[in-house]
Amino acid sequence: MKSTGIIRRVDELGRVVIPIEIRNQFNIVEKDPIEIYVQGSSIVLKKFEPNCIFCGNTQHLLTYYDKLICQKCADKISELEEE
Image 1 (cartoon, rainbow, N blue to C red):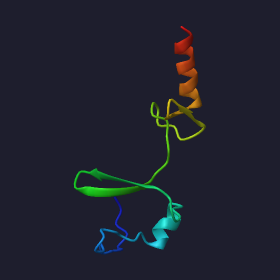
Image 2 (cartoon, rainbow, N blue to C red; image 1 turned 90 degrees about the vertical axis):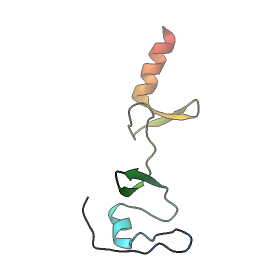
Image 3 (cartoon, rainbow, N blue to C red; image 1 turned 60 degrees about the vertical axis):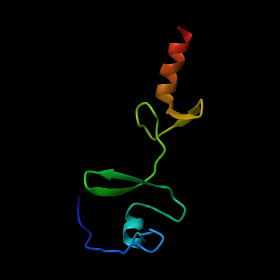
Image 4 (cartoon, helix red, strand yellow; image 1 turned 180 degrees about the vertical axis):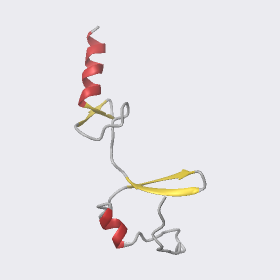
């Protein structure tokens, strides 16, 4: 990970402000969902991008039984259902 040299304090509600330079760099705007996860001893923030539950693709997503899947995986499922 690359250090930005920017330090922010956590407020009384546990919030941290992401600097505008970083939000612009990652195209994060107000109300965008952000994923929070732990990687070793680090807390990682990542802009949430919906993806296919099977292959991780983020393009051409469809809803299948309330889950997101890409067209390629949907085609494979369709082939399985025909058998």
